[in-house]
Amino acid sequence: MDDLTLPAAITAFITATNAADSDQFVAQFTPDAVLDDWGTTYNGPAEIAKWNQTDNIGKQSHFELEDFTQDNATTWTVQLSVTGNGFNGTSPFRMTIKDDLLARVEILPD
Image (tube, rainbow, N blue to C red; front, side, top):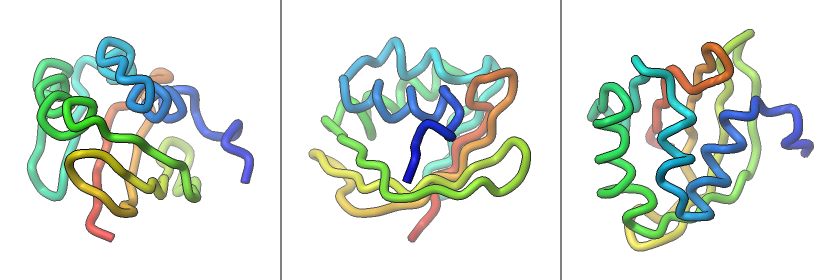
């Protein structure tokens, strides 16, 4: 699998999480981005930053890219193996790109 075909914002979402770089993580989102974590939505960078602290980098999450598909011109589904002090397991993340940033991230039940 060649993760170089993924948009830079998706790759940065993964690498920023693994590096525990919250500023870089939040910088990957558009100003009107939505993050949907199993039906709970977070709107805009400020709310996404709070989610990041309570559910992602704040839980020392680590992502391993397992697989991905391109759903259409702007949307990819990325299968991530997640470890850390919160959720542990494999989960699909549906990510939509706008202006080279993440406009929407949906964490889907596997």
